[in-house]
Image (cartoon, rainbow, N blue to C red; front, side, top):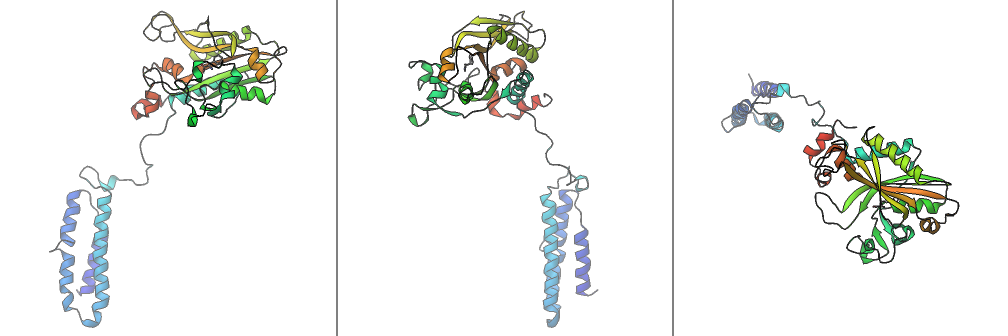
Length: 340
Ligand code: PHE
């Protein structure tokens, strides 16, 4: 066999080579590429080649060496270990084994949106960076209200007129200002409050607020709407109750509790053995708010409500630490894969 034929035969062998494990790959390296291997051996024979053939033969030899090295690198890259047979390695399979899933906050927000959509509410959105008028003044917050304090609200650039919205009631103001009546909207979105982060509080959280304004809207409409909502979200056995409360932008104001969906009202540690869990604030829109938004309060009345999605999600799925929502721990998120 001439040197040329030997090179060609070896090239064919190298290209046909398959490694099933690291031992075979190492044996290949020793056989062909190590100092005493076959390819350096051929280089040693190079001195016997006729001068006029040297150039062509050099090209062939270098090609053989490169191909052998490529083969070695390719199998190393495939991470050929004793356990992984290259025969079983199917590179056409889709990468990664886990599919995505919805975040629990998104799941519950979508459920809440869906319930109100069925009642004819439409979704409105507004900016997260708000001015004083839309977040406070139009909503009848008095000058000295604590929410206007740096301690409670994130002001931007120390400018008392620009802040991160503390509730999505600011969206309701924008909708009222736009002046198209009647109004039946919900405003889901992120809100910001300057609170220490703990198992029960965070400086960022999510709300859904709602607003209904028309002629002759009464507290009975509010009650029926929220009763339907509670039963849709927590099940047909759910009861509701209202407790008197105070918000600057509503009069009458109330807080609504639902019967604990964990113990059915008997008492457990989720409802602190009271049988009830508070889920939202609500009330009849204060006439001052309607007037601030150029709506005739003698002709129109309305109700508003607002709830935190985190709190409702914690109750629905028995989650005991609010911080879990923000940590993106895959072990937590995976538990919601089958939820819709
Ligand atoms: N905006 C209130 C809050 O952030 C919730 C609320 C909305 C209460 C509408 C009453 C009516 O807590």
